[in-house]
Amino acid sequence: MMHTNSLYQEVILDHNRKPRNYGKLEHPSHHAVGHNPLCGDRLDISLQLNEHDQINAIAFQGESCAICKASASMMTAAVKGKSRSDAETLIDEFRDLATGKLNTESPHHLGRLTVFSGIRDLPTRVKCAVLPWHTLHAALNSLDNASTEAEQDPVQIVTDNTSSA
Image (cartoon, rainbow, N blue to C red; front, side, top):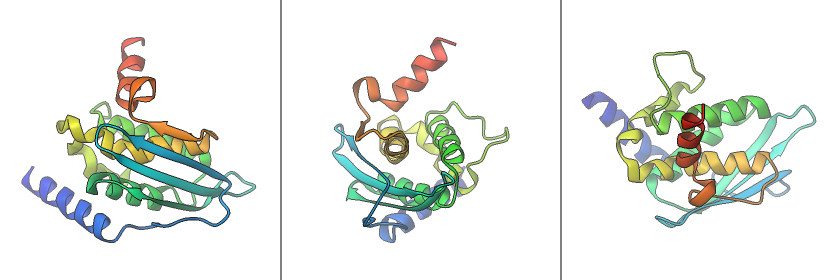
C-alpha cells in the first residue's frame, strides 16, 4: 500500500509539473469544455479524429488542481492514436476505476492509469480525476461542455446505472 501511495504521488507530481499534450490544437475536429463547480477545475479538450475515427491529435488546457491535470495528461497520452471506440472503453473503465466499480484483478485496458485506483478512497477528489475523461466523452460525442454536477455527475451516473441493473 505504501509503495502504491508513493507511486501515485510521484505520478501526480510529474504530470502536474510537466503535463503531456498541454496546449491548444489549431484545427480540432472535436472540442468540449469541462467544469467542476465544486473545486473550480475547468478544462478545454480538443482533438482531431481522422477518417478512420482514430484520435490523431489531442490537447488540453485550463486551470485545474494537480490531480485533474495529471489525469488529463495521462488520458491524452493513453488515447492518442486510439479509435473512438477504444477511447470510450478507456473512459468507462477509468470512471469505474475512480469510483471503485472496476475490479483491477479482472482484465481491463488501463495499464499505467491504474495508479489512480486509490482515488476511490478520496471521495472529494474523484470528480477531479474523472473530469478530463468526462470532458473527452463530451468532445467525442459533439457535446459542447461537461460538468461534474447534477445529471452530468459521472459518479451519480455510475451509481444510477448500477442500481437500475
